[in-house]
Image (cartoon, rainbow, N blue to C red; front, side):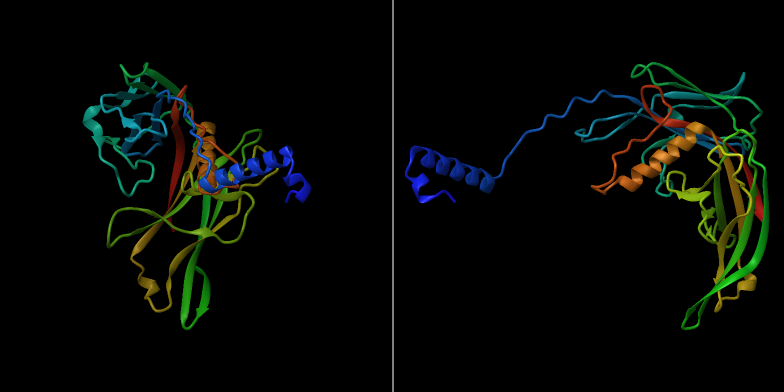
Length: 319
């Protein structure tokens, strides 16, 4: 507070006037208009391809800015073609667009669904994706390698473990030990999914299972909704003895007549796809956290958004 002597001087009067005006501004609040830069629309394409696919899914959109009310716009007049060498594997156009699939997190809006007459068979060699979204954008051509088929061995132990939760609740678990390959002088990344299907209620497979104990080689990745196992390019990191548990039933159930089946899905992704899934995982972890480091999603669409992702996979029936 100014001294009594200062309050009676011109300088003191000026200081009191400034203080009062400042307090009034704080009480009323300070309004500052922020101008957002204009958004330059970009082409956004997402498509995943793997041997054994019975349908291919893709999205082709025009991006929108944060102030856009309608959000990104599906380009329903776009066409796409998937090739391997001179062989056309699939083609999509406006007739293949379907509405959002509430059970598919990747396609929350309209998307292309291209049914295949037979399960997709891929030979060695790169895959090319051609997208024509004219007149909105210039035609796009992308090439991705087909990764090597993963080498997978597994050992299944039925009812290998149980957990007594008390009050008569005992839960039983199957155990699956997975051995993967560490290729010399190569980086190895594996997408691992343990899946369950109830044979009495439906045909859909659902992710199930968890690590039996923490393993520094394996981490759950929300980008792919899978376990991501990596050797980080080191020849000294064994990729064998990855141990998972899968729920097998409760004591008050007839666990010997469990109406379901399990399978193990192991995929080897391209490097671009690993970066994409890692960035999606980091982005989701940072969402809503004011202290998280800002992150962006890394794709491989030139001057655009999204990813053309390719994997090679092995599916093992358990047991």
